Length: 403
Image (cartoon, rainbow, N blue to C red):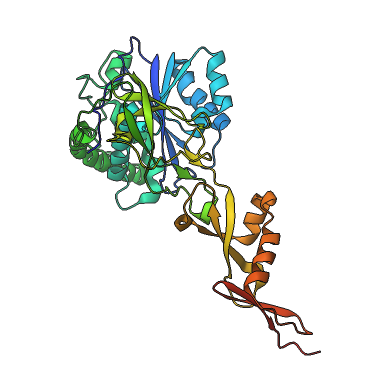
């Protein structure tokens, strides 16, 4: 089971002074958006759910943040976020530096250290499932109701609704619609549907909150390390999107090291002595660490191509094989590539043209020519040659073209 019980962040002193921020991604396209930016006030638990569409950048996220959050609450003193590329960008950091806002990030590769936003994200997804039952393309239409219902419901930790904490009064009650109370048929249909959805959400709300209450700590154990201990580090970096055309593919989990524990950071994070060539942050949550027992016979170094955002930016190392998707079509070539800092069993088939454009210094065309010359016997003909594929062999096949 994972190590390290979750520890709460310090309690803020004023409303909308300290906030947390995160993305809910992987949603079906609805109303032109497929992502929700979740912004939570850490004191009142008041939240905003803001729709976004991929691809988005730091300037577009900042513009939305200013429009929907700063406009209502001003700039916060601190923002807690994960290590998403948006929140690590120079634009984002400079924007809040000049405003005097301190940016605090989750420990490397452990987003649960900002557990509050994680809980809100899961609750939001539960709301959406209730709202859009059977109609996954309509969730954006009901996102404002999800936000309203979350903010007007009693929070288990404060015993008040976020609305009441922020505005100093109970939230106004929604008047339940009485059938045949309007002559406008379309309005009647809309209000009846709204009441049905809200009633369904209400019955599921308490259950969702109870599930979130025990979610993070349900299988955790208490573990501590001492300064000077040797530990293995588990990393599961994200492979960059263009590799093997499988977006957000995760590499297999691995333990690297062992590395020396330099110091304890807070209650559940540790600073490690990493090699000077490593670009990732050296503070990790305890759940990513495993104590090294005895002397290490094999030391596994952290791949040099992992960025601070834990993205595996691979470089091609060796051409292993060549194939063609369709016999007789030399324009559809694929190449089997071994990547630097990756074992041979993680080699991937890549599109020849795309790879040649992305890595011109790899000289892929020359390598394919050399590989073909060493693995094939060419049969020349007076007509145009057709290329066919056999594993570990490329040969020229005389065409049926007649002069």
